[in-house]
Image 1: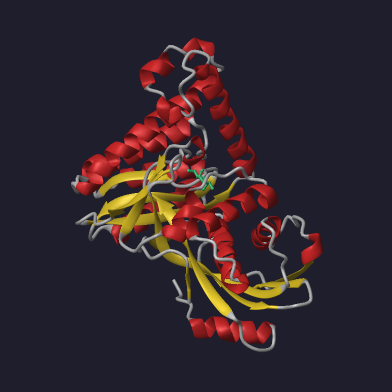
Image 2: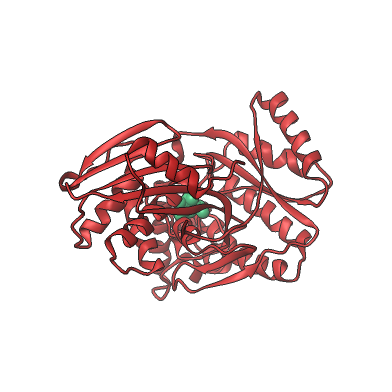
Length: 385
Ligand code: GLA
């Protein structure tokens, strides 16, 4: 991975817009150890921020025009602050956040922005949330609006809903903004209480395999899953009016509903109920460095996402299974929303290269596809550079 310095960003900005930027923001991508599709169900998640990040260099303008340049696409987009609307391009992650500032009552004067980064796109590592967080953080500085990190997280999430059309949960933005090197964040997505859990994993490494596929189902099916879970909660509430989310439901309560819910709704609910419980137990494994037990839970999560939640795909299933064949692997599962992106793997120290070689070969031979391999290095959340 190439590192990107403040000088690189300043030079890049100068080459596109004359002069120097007012500020530069770095906002990282994330992995999630366990707790997938639980955030919008007001459950628990356990993400950690990684060293791959998005960088934006910004400068204020006073003429009501926004000039954007994405260095990695070599594309420019201009927009008028008085007429912000989705464009169905990468610019939406920036314009959507600008729109949230306006909706909150802050008239935008205009700005120039250059963006670059090294989070692989479409890999389930939250490159879009990282852009949104970087822009929210940058506008907050530029306009001196004084929002705290949590308020910026909520604006970034609202931007994703409004401009990208994905009814995502809060995990990705929260992780990008609140990440801490060498730690995962145990976040309660209902109360938004959180605590940092040391990600020591003595004797083990985390490795990602990028499937290099992103199926078109990703965002439409995501919204469908959210609806199915809401439908499940509504049905459960007919008997248990006190529950508000699937985390309030036990497997026993759910079992009684098996014949009283559409089959798909029952399957989605049973996965989410299991995943919340699994995550809380996984935190104990992590804290006691019982990595074998943690790994087993990752495998169960993958099975649940693949069979009950149905958000995996043949490529992800293949990568997870191919890794588990290796004796040094304790756990493997898909990460993020699904339908493509990466798998995350827990591998004993000293065996990462061997594993990478065998999984890449198998993926090429059996699936005729190339995988990229990333070593997970954790890092801090959004900051000024
Ligand atoms: C995507 C969403 C998150 C979360 C994950 C699945 O990354 O943006 O909010 O729901 O999928 O855990």
